[in-house]
Image 1: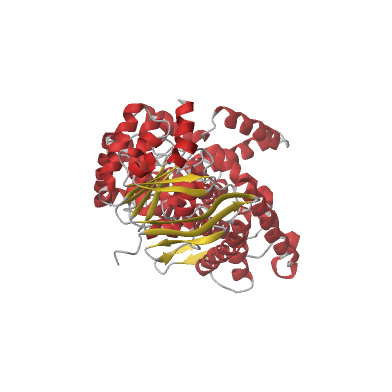
Image 2: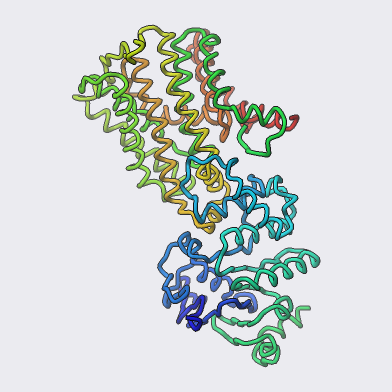
Length: 252
Length: 322
């Protein structure tokens, strides 16, 4: 069983009208690894992320979770199967408390239509939610209104909500977008810690950020896989340097 | 009175007993209102607005077709008394079931549309129900309304409620309103209740958390239909006739106005909204036949200066000082 990839995309094409966003992408993700998907703007990173999380259905090709084809499943079922994502643009419930945000994410896995249990009496759920908030450093903020927190804190809350589902695969779309350098460092530390327990797939624009932490890096360019290997392989790859690093260096 | 925060202070204590307090406040209406029939009207329209507010205030769905379910309740109850010869209690049950059936059917058609499209489709389908009831005049009385509803008394075994006595009728209606309030309070404090608010806040995220947002909205649409239908059934019992215009879109609009006036997404706001609307109508129409003009101007002023509604504004003021 160990040779069955935890997640796999096979021969995936995604077209929007006449535009081909992904072209013949096949990648198998190994259990327990932290894989980063990088690429310049417009490379198809976000589309690829959305295909994995089920919010975009491939025009052709299939997505597998532990060998099971999930390409046709609705998005909410995919979440329940164990694939959780954090959004690139912060997406929380702004008028609800931080604690409720996490609790809603927890309930999505088990108590969706419970109309009878008073939430105030769900002690074990509250304790677990606080424990999750503690991991991302927000336990003290639990009674704040989510929308009133600073951007970086909302990003951490986003992460806590993804964790609340106890995912087998954690999908992160530019988790450090808009964060200060200190916050970015703390977030990357958290991601490394989380990746020791589960499979993490990280989509990131900034290559430097993922070099030190990834087990494997996949470079997308014009909707195709340009390179796939260890950080050292990628660093040494001349093609990658040409399309990606060159751009970043000239931009810097 | 709506957000659950850790128990501390008198405000939270009051909030925990919100059903009992709401029922006490509603019981007082019979003393405040100029006459009993108006007090009963406030209860019934408040219940109707409560159903509307579950969609509008909590889930963020603006339906302009809730009068259809009020009407299905009223006609379902009235017809089973007039043509079915049933007594009041089973007739109310049939009224509520008719409204639930209608809401499940209409819900299946509208729940995929969003925003303004949702409002327009509910408006159109609501008018279809109105037209259907109007055209079936052999049965429903058409434009004359359904007449001859014999709802004089309810025998509870140990007590015979005389519905011809306005005070007894008020408390009979209050019993059902209290029941509805208790159920809604329980629902709102459950995981399902907070899911509704989450859908209002950010539906995409709700789906990403593993919820089937469409199914959740469909269920709450049916529950809202049940509350509107219960209000309609009680209205048929209250008036002993069912006027056809209660199914019209005017009635849907009126109840949305009541929700806004009282405070969207507040537990007690719908009743405040209903009380203000109906008391104003009663008082102002004594002085001028153009009472709608005065009420309309006041509505505009209130919405401009108190966008959270009368009750919502009061709540947030008290909460900020508690």
